[in-house]
Image (cartoon, rainbow, N blue to C red; front, side, top):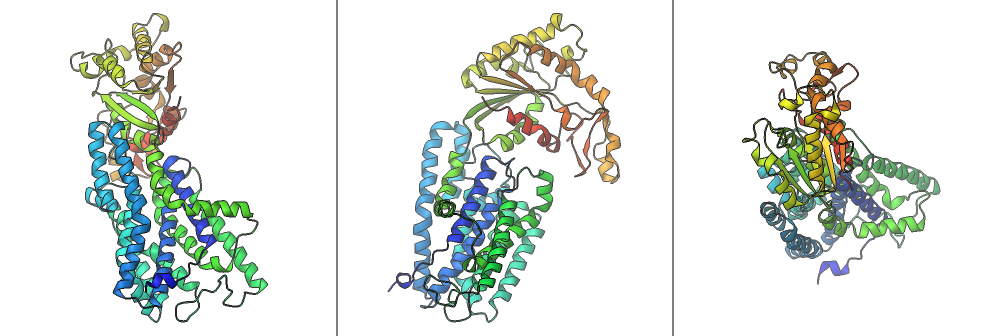
Length: 547
């Protein structure tokens, strides 16, 4: 007889509500990462819940004998529940993508799909050193399958591991040892792809769920629930119930606050990620352990039922939210090396708005054919811009280019009405406007003296990095001749939008070269901003990516 047939399902409303919180966090992080930067902790909540449920299922099976047949039946049931919608999502996404992606992008995507079908997206990331918070190409439709792969990898050895814990006279002590080793490994392993995506470095989160199971049980064969619908044990006193309810409410409120906390600085997230992950995991485990004996204050039936429903469909939502959550705009990013330097950040910050991103650029060249100094070298972008626009028909064009090296933009603007360069800019904006709905022109960054050693102050660990700031007048002398002409040239361009960037690192006296808080350089060389600087003003650019 199948041992599962004789086991009555125990429904936990509180766990379904935790699932709802987890999926809210994940959706917020994937669709609005700047608003909910800690939403990724929703995955950690899922891991703890999974650890608890696996322990529950296998402990109930073990009361009937944890035989080889029972273990195979466990795998069979897990596969039937998880794999059909998982595989269907992948195949539907592949089917759609072959019609909407370019050939090169589809080749990249097919590789992702193959790894996902092998339930090994996290393994691929480890082998290829691709971090979850990075993106090698725009169309990471199956990025979220890393966590599903990791969870199913845990299922492979869960029966054996949980059996060892169950027969141990001190299961919580063994769980603590395993969790400590796993968490320490995650904190100390320098390779982020391993510490983030290797199942051994995530084992501690599943173990927190296992610990919650044992804490919520009373000793005895089969680990009888403290609270069941049949009221198999005495009810707690009113005082105890109220205390548990107050504690549970505070824990859940804290967990919601952490996961959904908005607009956290990226540097803060980077330096506190291990702590916030531990805190969220601990809160989740504690909430699950207390759940049978407590409930939230002031939760209406409608709200509770809604959260339970969202929890019920959380797996399906998790499977499809990423393929359905990408943007719908086609964007052309053009310019010179400045455009290439913001390419990756544009992907990271704008993935929720952008459907297709095309990039055309040539080092040192502006996109204005009649203003380029070397018309032969700059032919690929400048002369073919109109052809490129006609072929792509982008919704939005983003222009980011250094202008100071071009002769026409070295002289300060004096007479805007009769300035030849300004007039040529107007004509180019008018031409581009014929092929797009919006033109976003990004203010160029100022450079540094060629002889400046950017790394020297960092090597010497100098205390005050602000002394290396560039005087504002020096910055303006390089940037303003070209930027002033841009601002004047778009006066009669209704589709044009200028995005200034200097306010993100300049005050009324100077412009920063280093981030004094993180002690990182804002420049990767004397001509180009580093990602540290680009991330400061990229939200301003992404805000304009809308029609």
